[in-house]
Image 1 (tube, rainbow, N blue to C red):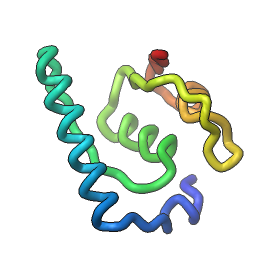
Image 2: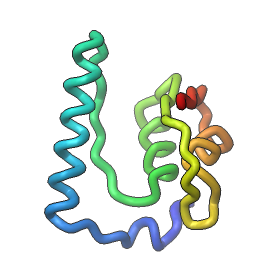
Image 3: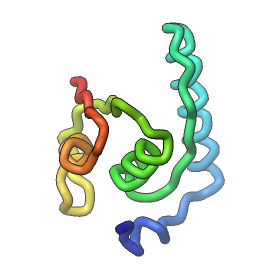
Amino acid sequence: VQSVSSRLETVTDAERSRQASTLREAGVALGRFGIEPELIEAVGDPATEILAAAEETKAKTIVVGRSERRHLGHGSLDSRLVRGAQADVLVVP
């Protein structure tokens, strides 16, 4: 269940533009390695959004960078994904 606060986050046009640019750059970088990513724009709690996208796309593996930053008192993103994912989760430094 997604929390109300994660659904009500506001993102400015400048932030949305920066995020879209970063996502496109990631897609180009992956393309250089022969990987054809499915890029999904999302706003909200990162773990909630990643888990929903993984379930929707029937992902077999989620790859995430290791995070020391905790989110809203729920733990780090990588640990939340490991605990909540149905798919394998690869955490890289």
